Image 1: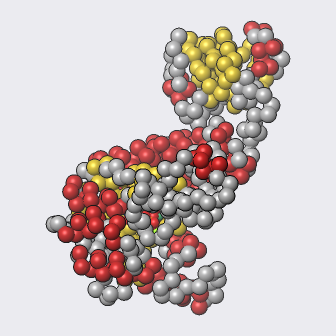
Image 2 (image 1 turned 90 degrees about the vertical axis):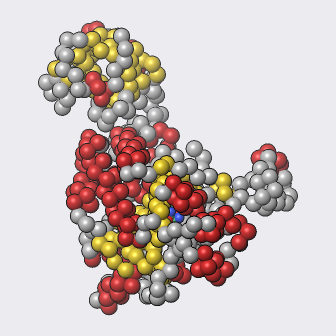
Image 3 (image 1 turned 30 degrees about the vertical axis):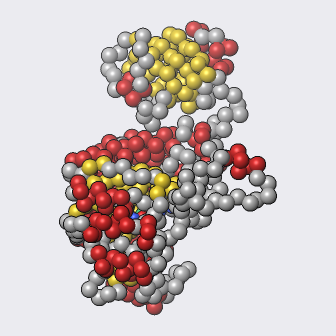
Length: 464
Ligand code: 4AD
Ligand code: MG
C-alpha cells in the first residue's frame, strides 16, 4: 500500500481504511497497555498520532521507537478523540527504518538557536526550522508568481563576474588554481591575482548591471539568485552568501519603483498569510507573539515615503530631545540600523521608504537629482529588520554616468558593455534589490539571519 504524506492523511475522513505513513518520531509516551507516537514527515508542522496497543508489539521493537527514529507505520485510520487532530492511526505494523540513539542532538525541546546552529545539518528536523524552511519555499514561490503575473521575465545573471556593482570592494575572488597545489605551498607565496584563466574575476555582489541589460531589451526582468559579499560583519542581518531578488524595469521612474517595491512586498507577505497558516501560527506561539499582528499590519497599511533630508531632521530632533544613539547623526551620514529602526519602529511605526540620499553614500549608477547633491535612491526600511530593499532610478545619461565613474575612479575597461546601454538607445529605468533572507526574517519573526537559510555562510561558518 502506498505511503501518504502526513499533511494529506490529516485531511482524510474515510475512517476504517488502511494507510501507510513514514516519518521521524517526535515523541513517544504511553502506559502499560498503549503507546502513543507523534510522527512527522516534514510535509506539515502537524504530527500524526500513532496508537500502538502494547499487546500487539514486541517490547524490543517499542524500545527502538525513540525521538528521531525513522518509522514506516501501516494501520487503520480512526477518528481521534483527544490528540488535537481529527484523525489518528491505529498501528497494525510498525517497521523501524532507522534507529536513533540517545546522542541525537535535536532530542530535547527548547534548545537555544546558538546550539542548533552548531548542528545546522540536523536542526532541519525540528518544528521551528521545518516551519521556517517551508515558509522560505513559499516565499520563493510568491516571488516567481508575482513577477510572472506582472509580465516580468526571470533573467539569469552570472555568478562569476569582473565588475563590482556596488563599488565596495567586498568581493570573493575566483581562482582556477588547483586546490591541492595551494595547500601544498607552505611558503605562502601564492599569487591570487589574475586567476580566472588569466583574468581577475569574483563572485557577484549583485546581478543588477546585467539586469539593466535585460530590462533595456525585454522591458521588465527580475533576477533571483545567490549573491556574495566578502564583508567581515558578524551581525544578525548579514551573510557572506545570501539570495537577492532584483527587478529592473525600463521606463520606470523612482516613484514607479517605490510602487513596485511596496506592492511586491505586500504580495509576498499576503501569500505567507494565506498559504503558511499552520507554520505561522506555530511561530507566532513559540517565537514571536506579535508576528501575525505585524504581518497583517504591513499588508493593510501604506508605507511612509520620506526624503533622506527629512529623515535626518527627525533623527536630529530626537537627539535634541535626549534620544541616545551609538553612532552620530548628521546630514551626509550613512544611517545605522539603530537610526533606521528608530524611524520605523518608534517614530512612524510602519515601514518607511527613504529616498534621495547624498550621492557620496550611494553607488555610482544612481540618477543625480537637480540639486547636484542627492541621488534618486530608495531604501525600504522595515520593523525588526532595518533595510530590506535598496534600489534607485538609474543614471541613463552617458556623459553624467561617465563623469561619476571617473570621479569615483571605477576601472573603465571593465564597464564598456554596461555603458553600451547608455550609448545605444538609452532610456529611463529603475530597479531594486530585496534581500531574500531579510524578507524571511520578517515573515517568520526569527531574530538571526543565520536561522533562515539552511546552510549559513558567515566569516565563522563555512563547514557545512
Ligand atoms: O543595498 P544593496 O547592496 O543593493 C544592491 O546590491 C543593488 N545593486 C540592488 C539593486 O538596485 N538591484 O543590497 C540590496 C539588499 C539589501 O537591502 C539587503 O536586503 C540585502 O540586499 N543585503 C544583504 N542581505 C544579507 N546579507 C548581506 N550581507 C546583505 N547585503 C545586502
Ligand atoms: Mg543598501
